[in-house]
Length: 178
Image (tube, rainbow, N blue to C red; front, side):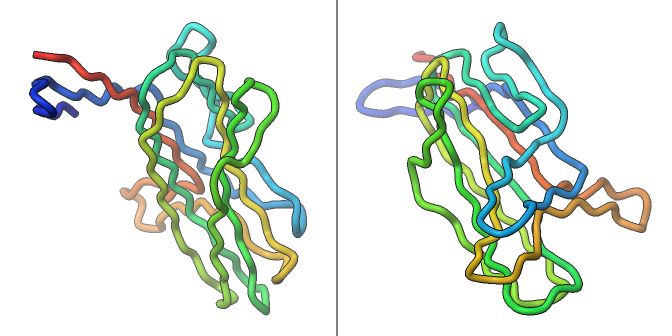
C-alpha cells in the first residue's frame, strides 16, 4: 500500500513493504494457570539476512532498523468448561535480543460461556532496532477457571479458508520524499 503525504512542507510517499505474514492452523493451549505460552504463528520464515524473521517458536527477529506496522490476530475460547476463564495476552520485547520484558499493559478477556470463541486484533506502528526480538504470550489467570486457549477452526462448508488460531503481519514503513 502507498500513501501520498504532505507534512510540514515535506511531500512524499509512505509505502508499506510486506516483510512477513504467517498464520497457525493448530490449537494452542497453556498447560495450566499462571503459565505463559508463547504464541506460535506457523512455520519459521526468513533468517538473519532478511529484514524480519520468524522462528518456529513464535519469536520475531528484527534485522533492519526502521518503522514497522505489526498486526497480531488470535481466535481464542473454550468448550465444555464451567466457571469463568481469565485469558491474558501480552507482548514481550527483548531489546538486547535475549532477555524479554513486557513494555506495556496486558489485555484481559473473561470467558463465561462454556462454549465460546472470541477474537482479538492488535496493531501497532513502532520504530524497531536491529537485534530486537518480539513475541506474544497468552496465559490462563488463576483468578478463573483453568480452561481456554487459541482455537483454529476449519469451516464445514469446504470452500472457506481455515479460521487460524493466530496470525501475524509485519510491514516495514518506508518514506520516499518527492
